[in-house]
Amino acid sequence: MLVTGDLELNIDAVEESLAAAKTILDDQWLVREHKKEPQDFILGHRLMLKSPRQITQTIREGKSNEMHPLAEAVLIGEEVVGHYRRNGNLVGSSALYRLCALRDVVRRKDSINNIESRLPRLQGEQWKSALYELLTAAAYSEHTRVSLIEEGVSAVPDLEVQLTPVAFVECKAKLQREDVVERFTWRCRREALGAIRSYLVQVDSGFIIRIEVKENETIPKLPQIIQQMVTQGIEQKRTLGAAIFITPVESRPRVLPRPMPVHSAELWEWMVGFKEWREWHEIHTSGDFKMQNLSNFIATEVQRPVLICYRSSGLAHGVQNIRQTLKDACRNQFKKHSPGILHVLVNTDLYGIGSNVTPARIAEDLKKDALSVLREYSRLSAVLFDVVTPPPPGSLRCNHLRLRFSTENTKSKMVHLPPIASVFLL
Image (cartoon, rainbow, N blue to C red; front, side):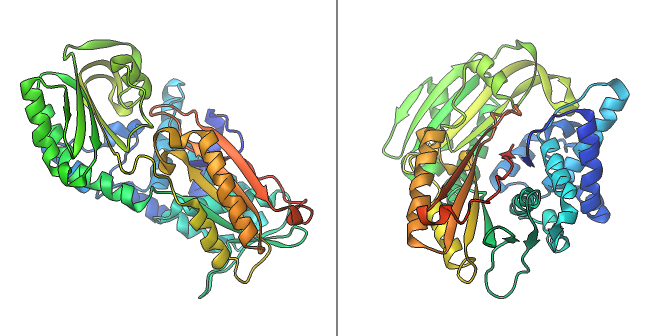
């Protein structure tokens, strides 16, 4: 999920990264995790076969036995290497980037003081935050001495770096949407999505269903409303609580121009012309697929494709509260440690939807937030943002934007601040 620097996905890089990852992940932990359910399509042959009822239950209640993403990356690395040795083909997966990130940490491991105390966090729920912190430390260590600061009763920064003057670094990774958005999407999954999907699989047609929720009290009523619309052939319906648009799609089998992953944006654009991946709070895809390669969920033919998209009209223009994150770091981690340098990882898919997630809009928002906090807290010397736009589904291409802000009176002091290698989130 995270990787520093440029990455060439070749078999040598995969093998090196796989070996490196195994040196910092516990063997017994890997064995336990590998008994759980993977999520990556490259391990499709290991996925548990589920009935329609089990799929609906998973949608409503979430995943309960999901494999840890770093443990899964090791398993995928082994699968890719084995596949290459058997037939000479290199199969791609974004999980390989997680392995390469671990490789980059291992390469600089001996140059980072106190790193051993932080490595176990990679096996926990906060592994992304831990990995971002370790990658930042690794990047600094290429230019100067770096120490991970031992945590105590009170909040402290993550790193001490030997700049001129000595500086303290705090890393913040914004890894979830605002709570109100999370509650909205969870309620839709629990009270509507599963029932909608259960009904549509019984209908001999494909659909694109777009749902704009105006009042959350309408969510439990959506399955019944959509069933009535489909039964009566109604394609648009507006109520006080929601606006629903249904586009029927032919149910006949269609042969793809070339084999494609079932979850790829390319497939859905070719099939139904859909390009709105960042316009909705959540999108659910399904259909009847003829597989060329089950282990990678590569399809050659599709029929009855279904897209269910929904968003909250009241939350559509909301964005993550980055300014509060900056303030919290100044009040807590930098209260007794200065000058402070703050690194923040921002995932555009979690920042907002629609026009709010263009790089230009996000950059302008972050500039205002950073300069405001820099003026308010003299203990803060610089703010660096890694703004990452993940690729469309099924692609490995992402966009990274590095932003750096500092106050005029601290620029001369921080002249030796080393550039941090690019950080990618896939």
